[in-house]
Image 1 (spheres, rainbow, N blue to C red):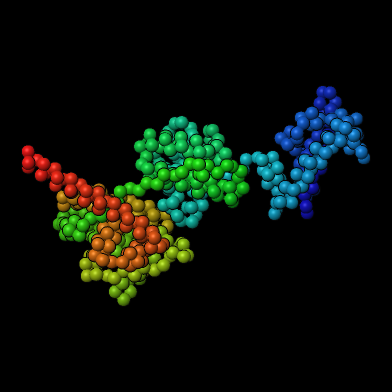
Image 2: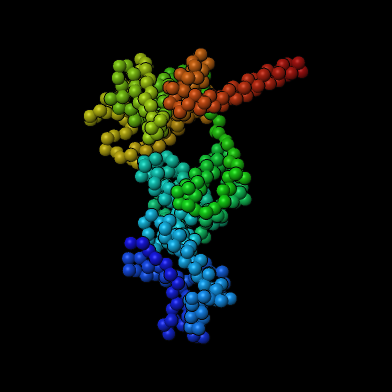
Length: 441
């Protein structure tokens, strides 16, 4: 049944004003239910919100004259707009009608509600890393908007902090202007955020803004044509073959340091495999002397979730054999980090904690080897890529083994190391000149 719209004059004595005027309402009827709405948000002349009995007769007559004709036309305009809204709704509901007709803010008009919904959606899709990125952005936006820090430390428990995020001053998408973004950037810088982190926050806001406009029909001026998101990358550290060898062969009695060392080397030898993929490997991933896997980062993307084939070297086999006896059960994991009882979120948290521990030990081992760079587990990936390039491997081969979406991504990835190489070379030249100057003096 189609909803209908009409103008209704409330003539009941209890509804009349002290002067005896009748309130004029918009009446929407659907499934024998009626709802009455004030015309104040939409009418062009507030004097036409109330009419006397005599005025009503003249407005609703066959041929209203003068001002009464203007009033009648205004009422017809309001009815026509209401009917257009009704026709545009695939399934009518009074709530949807109110949102569209009176421009009543929807849930996605509220930036904080939009963030919470997005975070919950990402968790449902098991994209926990991306979800945490949005959680960090949400907290930063809230603290900036309120002008004060939130009084708890955990960024990850949005579901338990809904009242904190949804209370206080509202923030609408119409408020996200180029000036607001610039002020937010300045505030983030003052908070000590890196250029790369600020870029992530801004891209998350842009992603959500686009969804609000395209999927939820939010009316707001696009701010990112004037405000340009600054790009920034953390410095990628790549070790030389000699430095990798120093870490790989470093002798230590600590079992945690040994495991971190072996995992670092395994990642390097496995063509720079991410640790999040290394710890997910199972016995079934090994076939015909190769590890065959799909990167966790791209497995949900149909065009990019392609199998990567990594040859198992003798040193990799030694590392697998050293730890495989701790695994139990059908199709066991190669390394004792995950177990089959964990759900996706538990696995994500376990991997995140494991990488944190590995980074701590690898950084310590590197310093003991005389390597003063900020070495992390990801350095193994960077090192494999640069050493492979310098050894004559094609960009196409490196791209395939890294699991990049295209060769262009790999070219950009390797270009950052070229910058580092140029910088290191310039510093060495300067050092040589300085030494000669000192010798002359």
